[in-house]
Image (tube, rainbow, N blue to C red; front, side, top):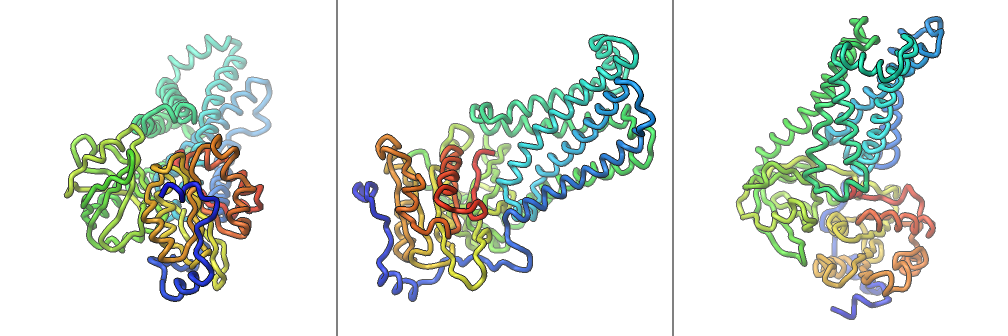
Length: 484
């Protein structure tokens, strides 16, 4: 095996072998038909962004009805008006953030988990900025109106205005969540810590809601505004309850998922085989992930997202987990028969992302690195095509890090697919082994293929740039992000 890892030739069957295999072998699990609606992709991401932007208009209307040009006279009035507007917009974005956390399956499976995570991260920053501006602008504005300095006005507002202390606590919680969510900080924290800190967003939302009705000029004097604002909060809360509690519990009970076997795949990597009833009715697709809760001692209170690492069947699912130093390291001690609760399936990193027109030949390039091989492995087994229609480039630092290599070889030989291990450090290669030049040498028609990319953030970012340089349009580069 050692020689194959250093080979400079792409492992692709000969033309004659391709024809024989294409004639004798059919896809393990063909990709589902597209249906009436467009498949997942950028159109849905843009539609979601448009809905979020359109939702700002009613918020502006609420603010405008109580802020007429004739009521603004001195600088303090303008600052107070700006403070109220920033507060309304921040409160609206907080609602959007929580709605994005509701894990609405239809939305997540059309827009993509990577897009919703990116929107959530960006909107979280804007939310903290707007709510901080809300507090500062109001205090300074009130101070100018009353002729007091900002420090004295801050004390007055905090101690005499109803529920302002609760609002301050809510802002402090949101700032804490924002700090924890920063990339530099996120990578230093265990997943469990990051996850549970984010739960404080719900507490902040409740505290902010009470504050808005107590002293918010746009709500305290308008029954209609209070009714509409309450209805929106109830709708978001209902989505949380339904999609994060009711649906997962009912599905977990109905399908009775249990651990069947735990298998070591490589250094610090295990696969967990799961069995249950009627799993075909879940509608799982290769490339998707689910959130798993193993009802074992020390694990039942944790929920982790793991991708399917093999094509799903009506009786079996498989996930593969790498020990990253958090709760994942304890999963290797799971016993057969352990009950499993789950949420999902989620994600749009599937064959439906392809922009290839119906009736035309599907040609795909898969690029995986590290734990990114898990959804890529499932896609490699199920994507439509034969022979060189599907090519996998598997990036690893050492030969022993090539998880599933034997399985990938078997799939490649059965379906005639291309398979190439890109092993070694940049120093050993003398350059980026996934540079634009290297990609075009290995896969000359890179620009005309659907590209599925998954791996560590650094690999993903650099490879996207190299793919663009190689001529691949951004619309054909599909990414599953593990840096949530």
